[in-house]
Image (cartoon, rainbow, N blue to C red):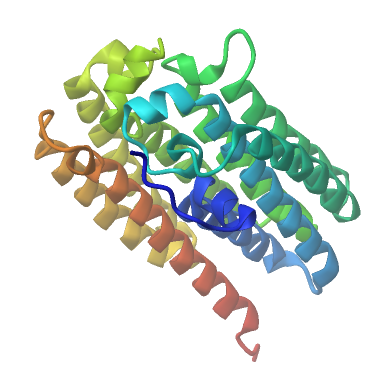
Length: 300
């Protein structure tokens, strides 16, 4: 008998959308805003909050829609998420997803045309990933492409919400982390889900290239990102904390890739991806804290 957990629809939607993923999207947005505000004498708080709400709604929409589209493979993979477990009904999830899309566009409107277009772009990206005759999720290049594009849109929206450019620090961070998302997370995310993906006909990087090739490629990209961000921090000291996290995170990813066991449990096979995700969180927290401290520091 399927175990059913009671909960409110908002709580189930949040679980389906993966709170850790929502948090890291908002951290990216926050870094874009904090670095973008470095060359701005004042920030419109209302515009910033409105843009942040729009971005959260667009992210929730994308992942909720993906949960609706991935029922077959999620159940085959033993996913604990509410839609796969039957706790959140598909019709309800679809209605909430539609409402979130409307909320995202409505909240982005006061933040200006760049944020509005970026929010629309993220909604379209999430839709193209999960739906249509040729959804991107079924292609080996899909997850890396979506990871890179979604990350860049998020930094752009954050900077646009405060009307700043961020100097050199923001493009360095955005480029390095886009590569991290696409070339590390986009490759490692499907390691634990190979069986269900094959059942659903998905041609993920793992099913196309094989586990060992994916592990080797992700390890190389992780090392490259750590090196690149460390070099960038020499020119932009605000990135120093993030560079330390990137180097440590790259080492953690490579270590877990080397120790990867194809016959391990689903939880064990997710360890390289978890190292990728934890690194993202720590890195962005450090960059955001440093940027805010620099902005608030008294000038001589």
